[in-house]
Amino acid sequence: MKEKLYCKSGGCSAKLGAKKLTHILEKIDKYPNSNLLVGFDSHDDASVYQINEHQAIVSTLDFFPPMVEDPYLFGQIAATNALSDVYAMGGTPLTALNIVCFNDQDDLNILGKIIEGGNDKLKEAKVVLSGGHSIKDESTKYGLSVTGIVDPNKMIQNNGVQVGDTLILTKKLGVGLALNAYRLNDARQEILDEVFKSMTTLNKYAFDVLNKYTLHALTDVTGFGLLVHLDEMLNEKASAFLDKESIPYFKDCPYYVDEFYLSGGGQHNRNAMKNKVCFDEENFILEEILYDPQTSGGLLASVASDDIENILNDFNQAGLACYVIGKIVEKDQFNIYVR
Image 1 (spheres, rainbow, N blue to C red):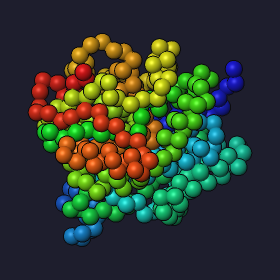
Image 2: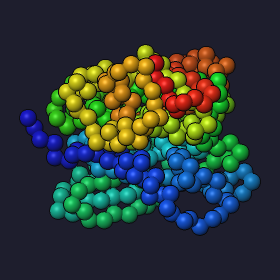
Image 3: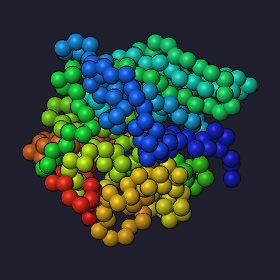
């Protein structure tokens, strides 16, 4: 078995648990400013700061350890993931700054490939790499701080769901499970190829389709898994029904769960949803897929049900994936029902 040198516990599964993070941030006494339209207290994807009547700055930052051995691919994934938060706010990314931790005793060509991979995705998104910061560290970490712009009257927050909405997801789940199997050399190449393609597909393309319609709420599914991100969208104002037969995931995920290729991040997500989610029957495989931390996951949108047919047609014509996974209902005993 060939040992993986770099991808020990990378990607968004390296995030701190949602409950721990919330406990810390609740104690922060931030400086008040009425121009800050979206801050960390709303659990949204990026901050939004209004600069005039029609313009606001969208700011986000994402970085993590490697989840793949190929440095160029790692850079692509990290950049795709960082850009996603701006699209999830309804914004347009403009500039990016590199964030680098690297052991200066290692081959600098590796770092060069990481940055090249990230920059190629920035060029695809028509975003300017304008600088960055690096420090010496024992382990490699890479990501970007991205700045974008949005009309404050058109920005899309994650918590505007309306009863009667339909929930759609634009990428399959199971990235974290597949990466764990990859680290243990037990993932088929055809599955990995599909996973890596998903992780390096910019959410720009899905957003460009969705942006033609009224989006009541929008987020991207990353380290907190589908259920925690969906729970943040509901914001205690509504409940959601998920159709267990419609949840999209990579084909070998049931095998990965059976082999217990699970992550600590997934268990943190499970703990964060204690007493908030109701499964109609015991289904350990589906539960782990729904709690699985995603790296560079898809967009999760709450849209008017009347638009669904047109949205699906537009996604199909664009050659993009789009899955109808559930609906928003009146607030009930549990926040989320899976049946």
